[in-house]
Image 1 (cartoon, each protein chain N blue to C red):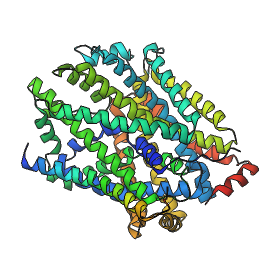
Image 2 (image 1 turned 90 degrees about the vertical axis):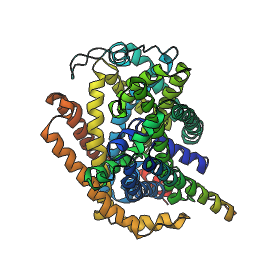
Image 3 (image 1 turned 90 degrees about the horizontal axis):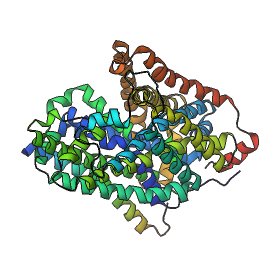
Length: 501
Length: 39
């Protein structure tokens, strides 16, 4: 049994945790969510969500990982033997997410190269769907592999596997210490340039203008909680796994505050950059900012290339900066996602880290090839929607309900984290986890079910929704239960139990 | 930019970046206070 790995420094752990939280969603999701949900007024529910759900869940996951010192299944097994399946479920969710997340990072790698000479031309939409993705005509068609995507995808997986093979301190920590500060500097350059463009002020005005009436709309509050939940890498075992590599003396509570505020601080920076650039684009085209607002893949790979086309100078340079920012933000998150199941496999099957990295990395690589086919984008869209809205949200809900309501575990965890942290948490933490978070996540899940019963997501065919969406969600739950039925090897269990604090 | 937009921009920056700065400041304060630095 290999000695359990450990972070080299507190700074390294924080860089890795923030690197995991800061991902593509910070850049392409937050700005549009804030704009559509009250603009400047959105900050009120957003801050409320950070304090009542984001930070409490982060502290919960950091504490479980630190106290029980294992991957998600092992830590939850040690918390309560009946909770192991939840750890495996979260690991399988991570596995699904990493298979398509890597493909998006691969697109960003391609676009970094395309930025030299703005090779996407004057119609970035046709370029993306036609030349790059070679998109199938109908959703559900798989078609063949697209070599232009497969090559950067294999590159991304090779880097990920290498970093994970190097280990927690020499691999993950070292990469995050380089990538995260570089990402911030690159994005700052983009933001400074964006806010000095003509029309940037209109964009910022649209982004920050508060619509106070929307504060009374419950959907705005749900959107704020959703943004915090999806953005902080909570609910799918990442933070739990990362904190299990902390030394015994660790200020968990303050680490959670730093991680949450660093993540949200970057989101604000991204919002300023994105809306300043959108304001510039609207100004160039003589239209309103509301007509150019978009999010997700469309914002990154269609709208941004259009904006870069219209830059007054150094177009290629800013294209490289933007897409390299996506690559860096994506890589730090991808590595954290893969680490969750590498740790789980290593401990459950008592294999070396090298074996765990190679087997899980190669399995994820093979499955991710599905998203590098002609029909890959459709599959990606459906899997992403269902695994997030039904997988991550439900797993997060089950996590807090099981621990807070059934296992009555919050008291012990609170004592543990307060004993080692400088910043102590009080009764508010328990109230947030046992009352506020279950209500909000429960409503989110109910609302998701209601909407999906009413109509198919994005009007996709029902069979695609069934096998690429619902089946994936169901398989992750059933797979989690089945994996928990296999016992821990006795010698492994003894050694692992010694590790628990 | 309208006054309300500028106000909300400043509020957002103060809360989020200020919250981050305060958390980091707390780490520095504690590590200075304690000779045995917790990781």
